Length: 136
View 1 (cartoon, rainbow, N blue to C red):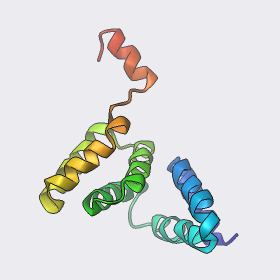
View 2: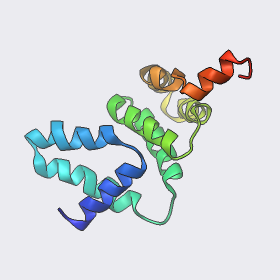
View 3: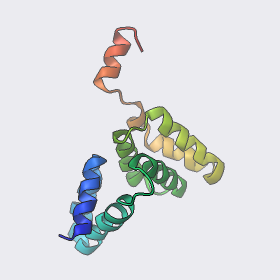
View 4: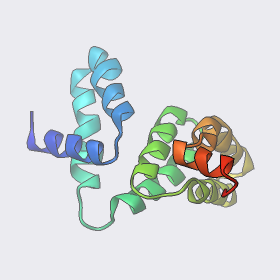
């Protein structure tokens, strides 16, 4: 594998983006292996590896862009999961999606929120324990 591909896989691991890796290495790779490789090399191995932005900032941009497209639910879900791995809170992700309403319109923002509802409402074990204990 190329250096770009390996760098992309390393970044996918930092983002805990198993779904991205799975998507590009199985579903897409079965039909178009070169395209699957490119889907790791270019966005992750080249762009995400640059020094200009940290991964948290890149995920903010990705979520905004994907929500604005309005037709990229699987990719939006992957990037919302990745965003939580690099420090974005669910409240911040919701604010990002709400912000897209200004530029992309309410339908795109509402659809993005609806398509990711399960990701934004699921509780982690420690959150549930605090709530049961009356602390959250």
